[in-house]
Length: 83
Image 1: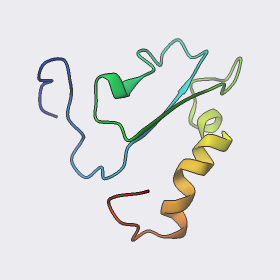
Image 2: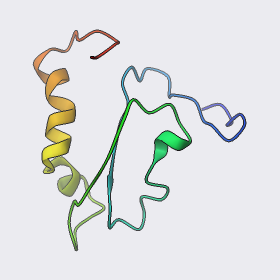
Image 3: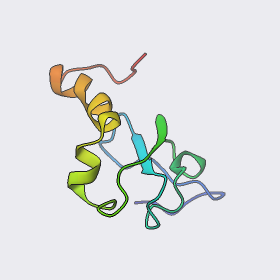
Image 4: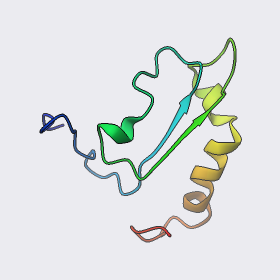
């Protein structure tokens, strides 16, 4: 990963569309708005959980996660630009 330039990082190689979901109560997810520091295509804050907040299960069970990945699961050849 290249070093940030002027406080902004680059999109990781191979990432065509970047969705950042941040739990509003997750103390580990700081800064939550990665779009302020990286070229994120979509950002959303969502309450994931009160106790089990920073786990794969908690994020994967979020309706916003399902909405973010469904187009790619249904159509793996989705174009680079998503409307």
